[in-house]
Amino acid sequence: MQKQFHILGGSYTWLQIITHVSAWLPAVYLVVAYLSDNLTVNPIQELTKRSGYFALILLVLSLACTPANTLFGWRFALKIRRPLGLYAFLYAFGHFLTFAGLDYGFDLELLPEAILEKPFILIGATALLILIALAVTSFQWWMKRLGKNWKRLHKLIYLAAPLVVLHFAWSQKGNLLRLQGDILQPLAFGLLVGVLLLLRIPAIRRQVSGLRHSAKQPRPDIQEKKQSWRAGKSRAQP
Image 1 (cartoon, one colour):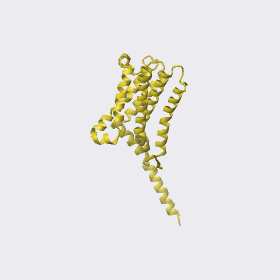
Image 2 (cartoon, one colour):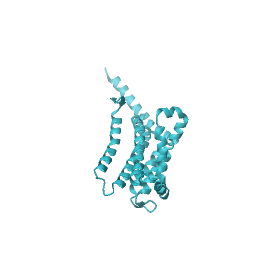
Image 3 (cartoon, one colour):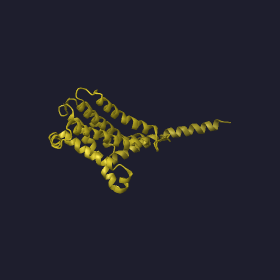
Image 4 (cartoon, one colour):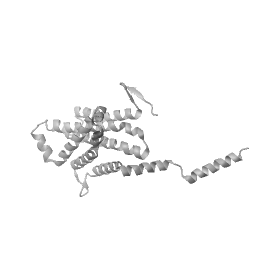
């Protein structure tokens, strides 16, 4: 059992503490760098890119928690799944606020045009709406109120994650179809998200979990040799 630390009325493990601190560090850095004019010659664009990038990383990490438990039996990873998802939403929301507020000044005439004219922004906005719904309903009160519908609603993460990757890939200076330009990271994120989603398919999940459990069980021939060795050792003793 992992040691619990009591902080601000709550109990946290070392992993949870590290998760919370690590998730806040990029935000602190971005705010300080922006206020001190240390974000390249185009700080708004850089702030938009980096906040979106951190949102993608945290989202992928949250998706990896359940497969980590399925593949390796790391149950402790399940305790940081929700915080990682909420932090991913916070960075995604900050990403949108930077775009809408700092770049477009919350102009209600220019914003709809920008979103509708550029498909990758429309895809990102769609993913953000899904993340908002999931973040708002991630608390116990909503779980009780929605009942079985809560799980159905939160399966939308399987749609949001590919949309976020597509938004990221489309925003890069590259051509995925021609394999030209800045495509390495989009391909890596796309492949990783694809694998993580495949591992959540019930049939694949059961098979992987079964392989893990069978790997833990000793082979019959090795077990017989151990028993024979122990029996021989006991007979040899006076």
